[in-house]
Image (tube, rainbow, N blue to C red; front, side, top):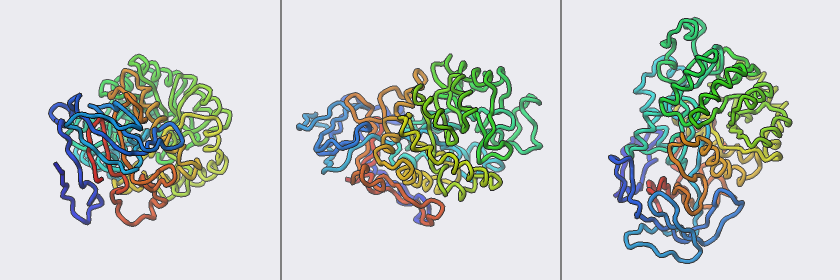
Length: 473
């Protein structure tokens, strides 16, 4: 059964959803549950498995229920009700994973700060999630926002979107990167009131100072359904009142966050940049460095030795950063100086074999977000000098990071790889992304791209959890 979406031709999303296939067994009333005997057979595909630099040629892949059952060069016997997709030598690969995004922060930041209500947040987030999914992203780690209602409707099969690993509200100290009040708004720690800004009301950010408030904020996010916890441990480019070189949260406050998360079997990630802040966070038990651009090679080596993760959106080290309206103009000069000082950031990460996961850190209007994601894919191949490295960051390494949520993982199972027994999150692509990243939508233009984003036609099949949602072969 084909699903048609009637979107006005002039709309940025026009033409995005065509040729979608509703698979027998997809029942939204049961959370999209699928019969364990349901089968899909991919014939004659070249496999990128998420791990090895190369393609396994002329393979066949049988999906049964929600998992990959068999991978074989020889023909595979399947049931009579099997859905057969003839690959014709196309590339079969894992669904992509964005490990640092903000799905519900989909709009102009000043509008969100002043005019948005919960309806705006969730409706815009739903459209952003659909575009992310149709760009081939089957999982997303949302590290700051209010994604839980959206996650529930996607999981129930009522709307297209990726699996969402939500952190809930940013947890920030007073005058930290997540303190998005105006200067004269009341401080929730001092006044013991929570209705202090629109971003607080909408669940995007939570100011917490001192061990008791940090514990309460972490536990509140876990109650909401957080898979992992996000704290703001350093300054940033988009916030008004915290210089980018600042260290945020004391060692005791960081330990409080880590202890509360570990009590629930999960971990803490941190918005963070500098050696001083990173060393403090790692000593407190933090596992994932978000951004981290301005660290020394010694700290890079330490992160590698400990097996920790770095999740950088590499456009933050690109010339396009300064075209981003969310980055405070007053901070441009300081950031440019840091760019020059830490220009070896990407080579150091590769040299020391750090666990690097893909990130977009999308903020802003939906169409700009799509362009940002595609620019990030392009720029990352330039920064790391290897399509394979970026593909690994998008798939197997990202899947490894998602698994750090332990018992708080809402979607248990092996992700980011094409292996027998792995969850069946699969793309079929017309082309070889190891040689040409544009077949996944990579685009060298972002703010200079004046055309509205269009579908990535070379991504011809999108499967999540054993369901085929797009098939244009």
